[in-house]
Amino acid sequence: MFLSICAKLNVTKGVNMIQVKMLKKAMTGNFIVPAFNIANFEILKGLILATKETKSPMILQVSESAMNYFTDDIMLGIVAGLRKMKLPISIHLDHGHTFDVVKRAIKLGFDSVMIDGSTLPYKENVRLTKKVVNYAHSKNVSVEGELGVLAVANDEGVLSDGERFTSPEQAKEFVALTGVDSLAVSIGTNHGINKYIGEPKIRYDILRKIEKKLPNTPIVLHGASLVEKKYVDKINANGGNITKSIGNENLLKNAYKTHISKINMDTDFRLAYTAAVREYMHTHPEKYSPRDYGQAGVEEVKNCAIDRIVKICRSNNKM
Image 1 (cartoon, rainbow, N blue to C red):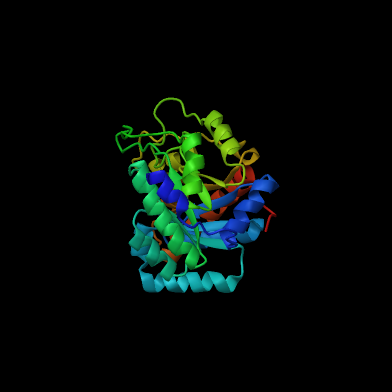
Image 2 (spheres, rainbow, N blue to C red; image 1 turned 90 degrees about the horizontal axis):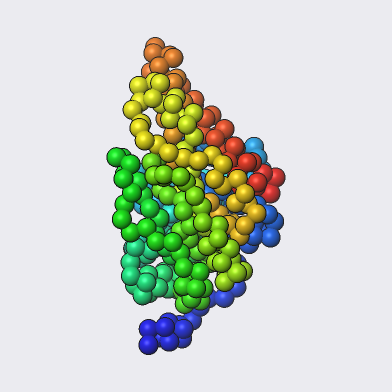
């Protein structure tokens, strides 16, 4: 009964929005659109400089906690400023968990939202996602849904319960019932700095099955930060105390050859920024201006983003 009711709901067809265009082009162009999170103004500036230098499209992602940090009034100014730059940048809500958060992001001018009902029972995830799709599409805003649960390692390096890989069969049904424009899947990547326990592994076999079931749907990969040892080492060498961080710099080197059209990175830029700031303040103890050490952070974020754009996403010169 549930599936028959959902099947009768209207699904907006032919949505033609900036992020949809980006992801569809990536699917056919053998590249990935970088989706990078902003945690503060310096990271935002570094990412903008990276997209300019590489001539790459970019999705700037804002979480609910980041919206709270910037405040709505300032966020409105950021969105307006990005629009005036006329860069191929989409502004995206990352991991919205409620309908109210989605409405807030759309009101702020975001052109894409993610509704994350992945931890809910399947039927509830479908209902919530479909509700968001109906509302967002009426505002000409695209929607990313999520099916499957990523594992998260805590500060002690212990994986959370509940990790679930995405079912290819259920993924096809989920997209049909909800009308999402892109789908985030769980195939082995994890959130956070302590990303893996044991050998990191991506389930490309599951991804290939999902691709066959959803040949026209852009696939999104969350938790794609590389967690490079050089940043962790620099932080710890300058007064930090990050332990048990595990990443894999080669894990996603062939991801651009798949239907993955968007990869999300956040932790890498936090590490790059913090490493540069700590090193600068240690090397220049006489400095106290935030613009001095902040600019060092901006440059390192820019360099980190360029590396990901060129080596992982292959999206340089795709503007």
